[in-house]
Image 1 (cartoon, rainbow, N blue to C red):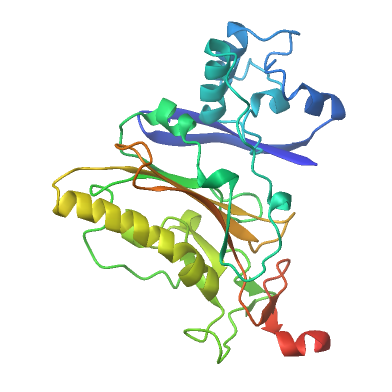
Image 2 (cartoon, rainbow, N blue to C red):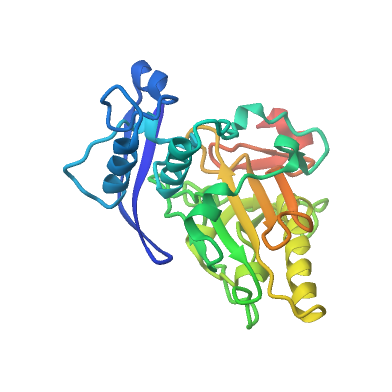
Length: 314
């Protein structure tokens, strides 16, 4: 199993990536993952919190137990793990955070999305790190050129004030194979083309155009049937509260693409949303949207695709 981490310095709302590397996890490290023993001294205490904090500030004299530090088990050690570690120290009876795994998602069977964990996201980490601040974050591309997690506090201030710009110059991972475009046309696909450059955080929410860290190779079905209803839900809520009720509201919003192994094309995206001011009463969802196109067979390892009836010929 490969394990990656990102060392991050947060100054105000700016995330600066210091280093990224991959290392093999041993069985011993995996067993220690639930012990919170970041500094590997055999116990969990305030020293572990201080050690992780120093490491995140790029103190190269500090070493950590990678598996123990990755509390949310997303294969990245970052400031959100620090927030969870502090919470665990101050509130030891806090239940273990829910860990989403792609292998737990059932195969696509006709519904554009699958509801995760009672449809209730956990944004405790964002609340503890950012509070009421307005923020947006787009993970840097990984070593395979793939997008990672994106999250933001969606509000009127973050939304675009101009028309969407050109994004055709961006070729996300899986868009081409051996120099040839994978974006085939099918008469039965809305808009003909099987793929869209899918915004992880929709343009209507954050105004991002040709941001390579925010665009994935997604099917037309993922874009329109899967993701758009949730994007519209959030946008409509913010606009209504701001324009009709004159309330400046915020929605915590996170979209994470998930890949099988080294596949350049994501199997789907996890979308989470939670209205801050009313604590989820208006917006509350946690779903996995499938990156599929009914009637089309997709090779996620290359991005190549063909109509179902010709699958045996390929």
